Length: 218
Image (cartoon, rainbow, N blue to C red):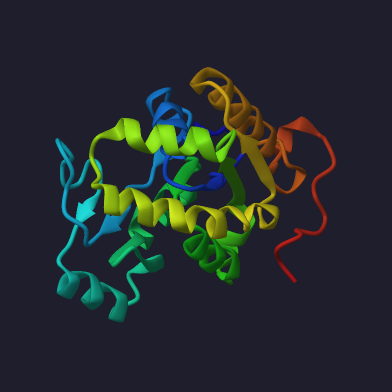
């Protein structure tokens, strides 16, 4: 995770419709030790074998709204009748330690993160959108889950077109293919972003010229 010349971690925001493969990518990157997967908080009920604190932080609606009032979230939104959000504590500490962080969030949440004026967020932010190869493939992936009712699947498909219209707002877009190809494409992005000039801090003993003006500071 990171590098001794990279003092702050990369914050990689990943979006895409349900079934696009974005969560699979994030989990694979996390399992390889390339980044920490920021666990989202939600008010929806757990599905299958999902565990609190591992898959999501499961809050009641009252608990979630209390944290909103205390400004504990970096981003949050209400989607399909439930709240989803990312706790600041799940992100900022890792970034300061030089650890890369993944956020699997929707387009509303991504817009909130982009609008954040915190220099630590602005300096670290990279955003990636994952598109399914086709609507037919998206339908097949959702049907294969077996965790949603027909009504829930219809709701997600109905919102997919609107959600996918936001892909041009992202710095990178991956059109999903196989899991292996998606992961390879994502890792290329992450590793390239680590080499951005504004993230590089050269040790004094190198004798090399330093960055004179930081792009995120006046």
